[in-house]
Image: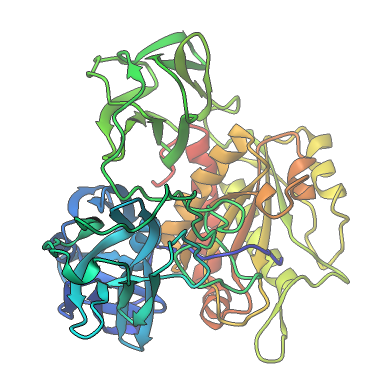
Length: 556
């Protein structure tokens, strides 16, 4: 199957041999070059978790994961062990931070702060980036022109800033952005000392930088990386359609919402509602997302975290409250079992409804429709030098193994095709609907227009269907543990077809997912996907994901 979107965010859970990696170094912003215990594996860079603490990142280790407070934001990545120490996928973390990074040669990852904001009023200049950079001031002895070098910074050429006459900004060299000021009085102004940071503020006494107030700042809609090929695959954000938030170059505004203590209401055997009372104007809608099938994170913008309430519920094993460092409150729920959620605001409260799937218990007795993508005259995507590897053949092999694993668990399985036959798109979910199936799982292999550009796996769900989202999270988390390929996360099919989604998902009346198990035109992905080990472990992971959705252990 071919997916068209923008960007790339690998969630790299690597199970291939470490011997495939090679020694590497990281040139990190203005802090210099680091080369101890670092390895490059594909396009990912693995670094010791102890190293990032030298960059000011605060690390907390979870089960198989590391959570960082870095550059004022919260980052979570999957870890792995190498020679007795914990290493982390740095590229994944940098993507979440919005940093600019690239391999300047085969062994050095250069990391820079992406400049997002430049604001100028009558006498003050403010600059904000995604990582800390080091501002250095110098003045020409002949012209009096003032140069501000932002060491460890990068400027997207498509960024547009409202700069007054006499002030310019450009990329000076690979690691430095230079802002130049040629305004009356700048040659005699007293230059202050500036400290490294993610933002800087420069006030020049006696210098008028702008005669009138600034116009609104337009920040580039591009992501932190150069614009990728339109057919390459993106993570959860499409930079052209869902631009990254503009980073504030100053301290976050004080909270505008007052939150009461969280509590649970409407408790039944099917779920409950987390209620967080609010007082004050709601300027930005709250958001919620999975941090794993059994962890839900609720963020309430413009609020400070309330005092802990000790609220408990039959479905919740833990509730933590914290501020995210950007003026928002964060509530993290740890669940006893995987649950879907619905988020809304009503009656002066944020309400997060937890919903237990209707299909409960074990796989035994459940009906699962397994759909092998393409078939017959429809070969699907092709890979290899001669394009001889066909998607339809790989999907059928893997779908048959999924069926075997399911029947071993006592489930009833219906395959939309068990040979090289073409089945129309609408007929595939039609088979599941007529059978009253409990689940629909469609197996596909991805592709794009540029060979070896994109690697990894995605699990799709339909639009914003809560049960589809939950099923996708459960299966994708299990695939990530065993595949040996980057996890690109779970996506709504509306990111590909905004007004309708995928036919096989939108016409299914039960929880349904579409798996993209790797890129057939990526040499490493294709080689791995053709192995019996990958195919068998993938089938087992799908079954574990279904069990997790049903409330089982999933990973056991």
